Length: 251
Ligand code: BV8
Ligand code: ZN
Image 1 (cartoon, helix red, strand yellow):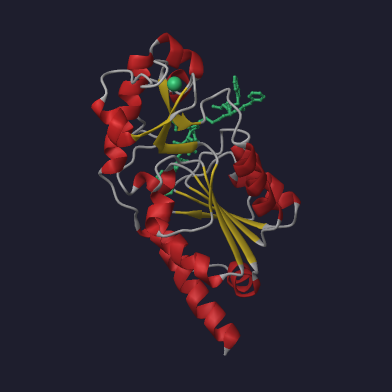
Image 2 (image 1 turned 180 degrees about the vertical axis):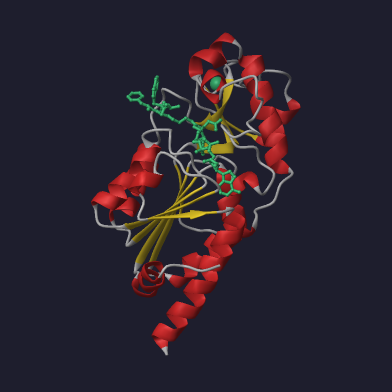
């Protein structure tokens, strides 16, 4: 895989690298994306299921969707793209992952500095009293899990459409975008806001923005480079580049 001289020299000199990921980075682990041809449950739009009103109206259906995704995520492994990012983290003074994904695969691949913008499907809480519930308990409960303390509905700890992102995760993500020398946007269609504003924040603060995707997206016209291909192929090659270019730098 051939990379541009500018990306090679940027990787050589970068102190701070930030990687923004979406469902596409987990596609090669077998996790269906939202809007691709393999989209989850073709008959439903994520926006119709992943929102609080839909949950209150039909908690059983929304829980059926999340239980399906929990089971799926329990049976998959991080792929070469996740692993390459976990390795890259060790090669830069500052390295952050900002993910829109709720599948926990970055942490399972060994990444340490991970900001989860849209929550984590392995966590659940009661909408009445806030009591938290582990997946083991939830998966044993019937259709729409109820709180064992107050009897109210339990929900997955994910950010639904129309809901605010967790403030601490958002603030850390904005700082990681603002301080990046290189900002990678990997496997995201860049249509969900405010997450999709982060590459623009990075660019405005002087970062070199590199998009990795199997097709062009809304972000492509603004990116400094668009690397077309699967993240599971491209990221390990970028890691090799880091190894060689930073080694030569040190010698
Ligand atoms: C907010 C968690 C404001 C749940 C998710 C009207 C009403 C209300 C809000 C809005 C509205 N209009 C707009 C909005 C804002 C809304 C929004 O942006 N809507 C979009 C759809 C227009 N945003 C929100 O509501 C956010 N909150 O704005 O609050 C507010 C203000 C004040 C007071 C109160 C509130 C909350 C958004 C979070 C929603 N939750 N997920 C769950 O997962 O179940 S979003 C969901 O989409 C996932 O998190 C996902 O990660 C995210 C983005 O999707 P992508 O990751 O990009 O996935 P996608 O399938 O789209 O694309 C995959 C890409 O991978 C493709 O480009 C494909 O080519 C590529 N690919 C595939 N294979 C590979 C690959 N690339 C590389 N390699 C491969 N192998
Ligand atoms: Zn409760």
